[in-house]
Amino acid sequence: MNLPANFPLKKVMITVVSVVIVIALIITGVTVAVNGKAANATVDVEQVSNISTQYWGDQSSTYGNATSDFVQELYPDKEKAISKIFVKEGDTVKIGDTLLQYDTTKLQLKVESKELEEKKKKYELEQAEKELTKLQNTAPHVEPVIPEPEPEPTPTPVPESQAELYTEITEHSKPFKGAGTEEDPYIFLCTEDAVLTKGFLLKLLGVTDPRATPTPTPTPTPTPSAEPTAQPSEVPTAAPQPTVTPEPTAEPTTAPTEAPTPAPIEPTEAPTVSGMAWFKQMTFTKTNETGGESVPTPEPDFTLPDGPFVARFEVHEQDNENLPLVKGWQMDGDKISAGFFNEVIREPDDIQMPDLSNADPGISYDTGGSMYTAEELQQMIADKKQQIQDLKLNVKQAAHDLEKAKLDLENATIKSTVNGVVKSLTDLDTAMSTSSPFLVVSGGDGFYITASLNESLLGKVHVGDTVMASSWENGQMYEAEIVQISDFPNDNSNYYYDGSSNPNSSTYQFTARIADADGLKNGMGLDITLKAASDNASNAIYLFKAYIRSDDGGKYVLKVGDDNRVHKTYIKTGKTIYNQYLEIKSDTLTEEDYVAFPYGTSAIDGAKANGMEENTDENDGIDARGLDA
Image (cartoon, rainbow, N blue to C red; front, side, top):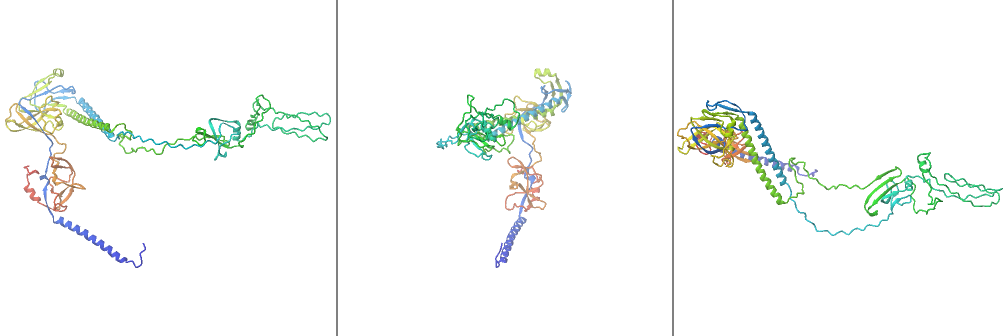
């Protein structure tokens, strides 16, 4: 850039530097103000243990009855094979003693079979979901709009053919254009069954026709000196040459003689020569029908020049050279070859195929041409969604069956659940025919609870778990330990639905032993609370949601650092429980940490924490809901 000599460059530089300094001062001032505000701000903090809770799993309620004479009965199972029985009738057993052992081989095969069944149900669900996706991506069929018929255009008149149409091409056939060269060949209009004569081929190849008969000239007869006798000249065997006679010495008496008629040359034997010489000898002179002298033909209007030359033969629609070409061929007399040049129909260039390079290999996409209407597609989509719902239930049932098969494998060793005596032990066939237990252990000490649990709790409630029971009559609470869960569903359930399980699912009977049974009577009704184990660890932190805030970086808390000031700390969260607490899945927060309420004018990054010691003393023993811990 060229500036004038008197341009005030110094003033411009001063202005730019001044602006930069002002911007820097503004930024510095804002930063100092913010830091000063954060340095002077004080925010109250709370210990995480005071504003969080723990989750021990879902609770389900049922009811049962207390009994003082509990009997353990074992029924035969067709799907299980007993490998060994460890007791006999009359033996005294205690809780935990081994009664019998099932064959684990058959149980393992059952587990594998249930695994395959589960995979099959999942595959059917996946296929149905893909079919649903295909239906949702299918465009409905739309009846095409029939356009108004357009008026037929006035046909362009086709010029009349000016070329002669040939069915036989001779040396006298006249092309309708061309110069006979390879770039501009002779072009003949002909029919599809047109033939080429020998004369044309000789012209094309540039070969002179040896059949041409020379015109004979009369031979003058001289006056004989004695008795001259006119002798006919010898018949020429090749091209005849005129005979020259000497001039007469006296006045001759001229008598015209007849010109000899040349005999036609016909090949009677195999040629003694080869090549072009033999080809020339194969010609013959045209005679009349009676075999007499040659019949003179009229002089033709056109004769092709001697070759070699290039000729092309075309067949056009309606035998008109102005209409499209149907077929054609070309011959070059110099190369003795034919070149066909039939038209080739080219594929259209405007066909666009859909790009499916990024598509899911498991899903097929409808690119058009659907024969379903919009109403039919909506019904098919609704039916497919219902099918998917049914398949999801099938998958859940298969998963439940698999879990039960695994439990059977884990519990292949059957132990006594009561302290008592083996009352009876019969063979399996007898027990199966009479639908009676083959092994019965009768216990007479303590009280037991018999109740039912929902099948959704199988695998979450185990033998050895503790349940809580409350008496309707005396109002006391009892703690009981589960000693047995039945392998078979109940015919009639004593389980009542409390909103946490599916009321339409099956139930299984379980038995729990009450260690301290003061105040219980035989047959007394009890309310029972079951705690299902959670999939998450029981020591997970569930923080009160009001102390969690989010921005573009994600969810965060204002956590107190080592400098006794709060700092923005991002966290990972999980599920919500009780509609108030959010699971903290990251390791950045513990129950011993302190956090500040993240809203308000003083809740800024770098604010000084206030009330750490007071919180520890005042809130000791109080949980986040204000209840005694």
